[in-house]
Length: 223
Image (tube, rainbow, N blue to C red; front, side, top):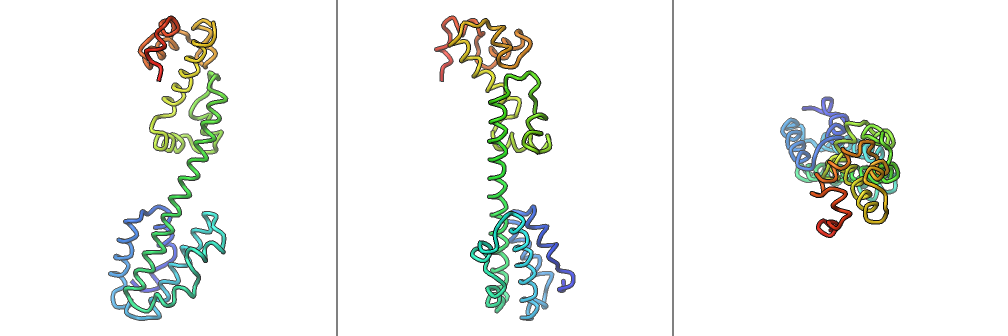
């Protein structure tokens, strides 16, 4: 591989979806492809500059300010001593690529936390709505339903429907304990238009009917 066939786009693709272990293999494959070209100091400098610029552009897209980029990754002058040998150049490339990938992962998790916080807040305020659905909540947090479903399950450990049902059943328990509302009325209060289906779900989750729960079985399932 020569300089013309090595571009910032190749590095950018790695940064967008690669993992830390993949960085190591990426650098090794590049070194093998470069062959004797990497023995040349100007060539190494050129490659490291391309890597640095790709990283700088990528983390800027993540929202990192220029001052922070210089603090975390240095500047163009920082890489010059690192090009002094093949080993130092390879280490420099591995280090800044790994750091950029870690930063992407951190930003993604922060973004997911914000999305899930907003989703949980919406569910808490709308679980009584009969028409609440994954699509509705996904639209609220501006994410496609499929993507929202995936990150919700991954981050929460349960599916959207399981979480919504859990929220509704916890609300139903409170109403059964603290009000005199009939089970059918509580069903409507927590978003179910079919009282029989509500009772079925309540028993499925708690192992006891709403009536039995209110009549003294509550202590058996209190957590």
